[in-house]
Length: 76
Image 1 (cartoon, helix red, strand yellow):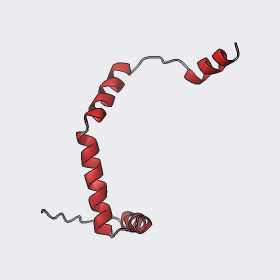
Image 2 (cartoon, rainbow, N blue to C red):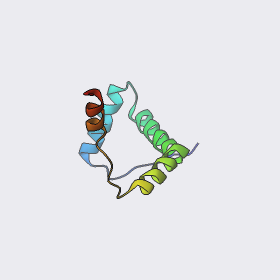
Image 3 (cartoon, helix red, strand yellow):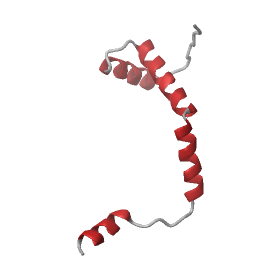
């Protein structure tokens, strides 16, 4: 198994990670490992690539106001 050392974390980042780990009943190492694993799986997910493709296809389009459409439909 590989090891990773992270240098030059700000005090704020370190304390935030420490708090997250405590809230999740994990050690800091377990918390950071979990976060890295989750992010790498998400980045490799085909669903993410599909979402990016749709965002590119829809970029610049004027989309309707769905909430307003539902309200108008309900008022009929």
